[in-house]
Image (cartoon, rainbow, N blue to C red; front, side):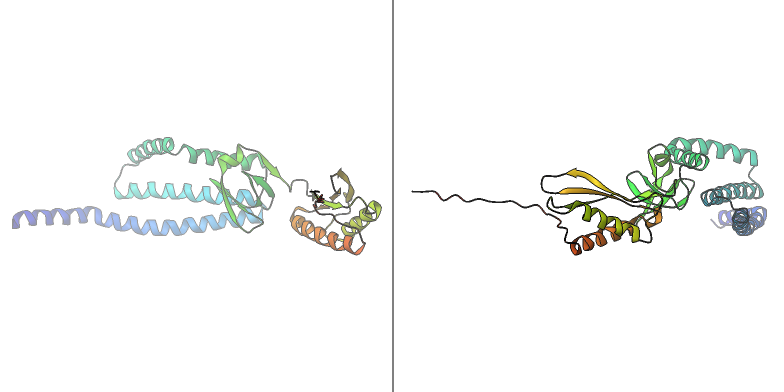
Length: 274
C-alpha cells in the first residue's frame, strides 16, 4: 500500500515538475492578458470617440474586439500549457460547429446586429417602434438592442427579430406630428373653438412653427363635433406637447365658454293608465 502511495506521489511530483511551472505561467499570462485586453478595448473606444464614430458602431466594435482578443488569448495559453495549437483549433472548430447548430438563434442575432449597423434603420438615441415596443434606443450590442420606454422600462430585443420585422423610426425626419382630438358641442361656436386651440399650440414653446400646427373638423359625431388638433414637435418633445396641449386646451375651451359634451341619455317615462 505504501509503495503504491509513493508511486502516486512520485507521479504527482513529476507532473508538477513538468507542468506546474507552465500552468503557473499560463495563469499569470491569463491575468495580464485580460488586463491588457481591457486596456485595448478602452483605447479602441477612445479612438472611435475622437474620430466621431457612430455611437451604435462603437458598442458593437467594443464587444467584437473583446471577444476576438479573448479567443486568441485562450489559444495562446493552451499552446503554453502544451496543447498543440492545430489540434486545439480543430477541436474549437468542431465545438464551434456543434455550438453553432445548437445556437442558430444566437448566430441569427449576430447577423441581425451586423445588418442593423450596415443599413442603419436606426441609431442610438432614435425614438422607434419595434416588436410592439415604443422607446428610445440606448445601445446596440452584437446580439441584442436595448430600448428605454416612456415608462422608464428597459426593453431588450433580439437583433434577429428587430432586423427582420417592421421598424417605425420617429426620429429620422427630425419632426413628429402629435395627433390629438378635441370634441365640442354642436351648439358651440366652431370658429372660437378652433382659434382657441390654435392659440394654445402657437404659444407653446415646444410646438414647431414649421410645419405649422393645424386644427380642422375631422368628424361629425352623434353628439359632438370632433376637431383634429395637429401640432408638430421634435421627437424628444412628443410627450411634453401631447400632455400640455390637451390640458391647456381643456382649460382654454372652458374659459372661452366652449362646451365639451359627454355621453348622455334622455329617458322618458310614460304613465300607464289603469
